[in-house]
Length: 555
Image (cartoon, rainbow, N blue to C red):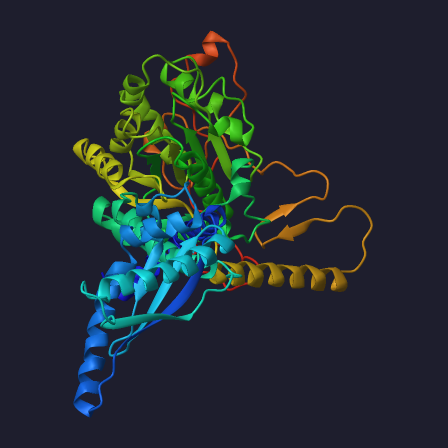
């Protein structure tokens, strides 16, 4: 891994580093507060020998004293001196071994000074122990250095400095502990972030998705919490990041195959809760925004959600037609969005895979292809059931959804394999619910929202006052009345006898869908007769939002 890889990991997983650092610092602070304060009292001893008259004797005596200092530091930390000190103070709650562990003796090189330090929880007792220990060592050293036959001792120890009562504890060192906790927390947090990134097998970037799918990335949809309550985006009113992401995806769909662009598309995912239904709905809406005639088919016959999100009747629909209980024109429903029709799921059948793989299903899809410019099918997840695999094999291809940070590499790879094994064409992949934070996203939204506000303010200032409701344009695409929106104009044309849908040519018209009826004679109509809906492309729409028309959006 290179430096930029670590920086990327830290940027993506900074919360792990922050939480680990805070925990480490709080742990160090808690340990410091819970630790009993320890006080330290110190004394200093001076070691000397009898000096001779000559310089050589003085030098030899100094070397002898230095050698004695090294030995005395060992005696000062022994249990013998500790016992004598306890006996002198009359302490019985401390053993000689415990006291010896509290004593530290040290000396600087080439000196005859010995520093003695005693630690204790009580500052007064630390002082008394240090002074008593030093005094007892003076007596002990005299006894050891005095010859057995009497005479002057070869070395002499003097207490050069007695201990005072310590004021501040030497332990715990709170500042040092906090600094150490901070350093340990940062290092441990970075290690955990790198480890978490190495163990994370979910898809999060374009490169990984394209490598696993073997096809290009069609779109990246940012996370939009508003879609949890309202799945459909009103593209005529919205310039949000999500709306622009779908518009970009619409452009990419048109360039998947310039000579023969896909028109019947199945939107599916590896597992549920990856955003396939929301993506299917808004894909259909963004195509309708460009002026195309679009039908959204609720192909998930196990857990349908399209009819609920768009507010259409879901009791009759796709399964009703497949079971022969109604004609296709009977169950097609117009949505509240111009240019978008909905074929709901209908009653949930016990055998969805068999129905979707039947010849009748292929016949229905062919009729929808002839009737509409785009057919978007919301399919079931690929891994739990085979419904979408069967549908994708009978259409122009499938768009596979991968949820950012949730869909694993293995799941995506298995979904691609399932589609490929059935001969279905994978058009591309879409990453949904990507993080929508950062400076770029903010500036993007700010630019468009500011531009929209400026346009509205300019239009309000320049528009003359007129009585009554006035038709206004939104985004240069759809015209609305202020109170009621008129139904799309669909002129009735006489039926051309002897010609069915399979022989339909551009310019032919089909009859508009009628309300569903339970009349058996009406249900026996196998194929809708031709009349009122034009198949041929309509004239090119005008510019949207006052911008130049994109040639890729012209039909």
